[in-house]
Image (tube, rainbow, N blue to C red):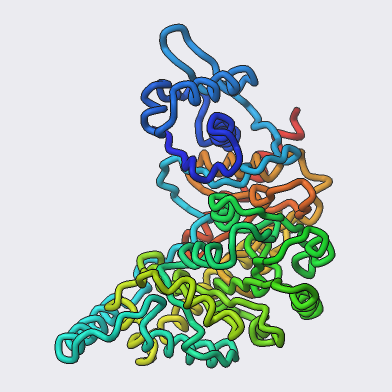
Length: 479
């Protein structure tokens, strides 16, 4: 049965959110023509909503021609030969990920680790050693925001890899970035306005929406977030990804970084949350200095996660507080218990200090570089390569395949190509699915998250992508 996460609806009504999700699945090709939709009562019970919610969504879809009804049989998906173009329509939910249960042959919207690359045996032996130590010495003192050995290991890692000099006392460890977002919202307050980049990371915007905080979606240009627009919004907190923005892949320029810091310093209580989520993966040249390391006004909170290096099985993230916020944060939020088990924290600390973590990251970086190079080389060797270019491929685990001449491409080209690929079992999202508001401009293109793919899968994807592009262009010409 179809499954949708209604907690991501934000301010949208339940029936309208359900309508938008089903419509997106139909136009995206995930619900083929003549597919029978779930019975209203069973669907409502499955989603935990009222029958009238489902009925209103179905009526809206039927009135627009996306579905049709058969007497005493129910509703079915209508045949739509060419998916309608949605990129001129702007709602707050067009970027919500499709959650229809499906096993994708090739998934370019996943940040999972490739199989067979994580050293589980090394991790297991490290954990056994930690448990033996605990049996002999006893557990360390419980600390709400991370065991001291892990916070010290993170401090050393940041100094080595990012040139940051931070005290372990300023580090907060939690079970992933989402927990850290929640802690910060509680600490900084729901009355403040938070600014996020647009296009941006959908889950981040959904978390802010779920907490009912005022959120400003700030458009970007080639240098990063637009600080001129940011200044006009009245936002007090800016959540940015300067090292490798998702989904655009842009790296915030050095002048724009100082503009951001100047914005924070120009009014009381302004803060920047620097989300450095995939800083370990840079393939060309040295990394730019973090905002935290060049901030002289105590205005930056630095965040990172181990999810891209350890994988989603290990939910560990951390943030570094400036001295100006450290004591207040611990005083206000210290009633929480640690959200990461002590054994897991001590294992990770020992894993890092033994050099096993660095060896694993180096191996992972080599693998991702090979996959990225194969992706680029495979595209450039095809006859249809000229309308495309790669953006943001020098860092991180995703890049954008941008249309260089979108004005001469068929209307709705990226959405229709995405829908055709979905029918083949390939998940690839157009970048406009990550746009929240129409004032945010983005080039036409696709977001390629390649971290979970093998070299063979990349070659197969490029071949099928080009076939689908040819089909779409031929269909448009023949109309």
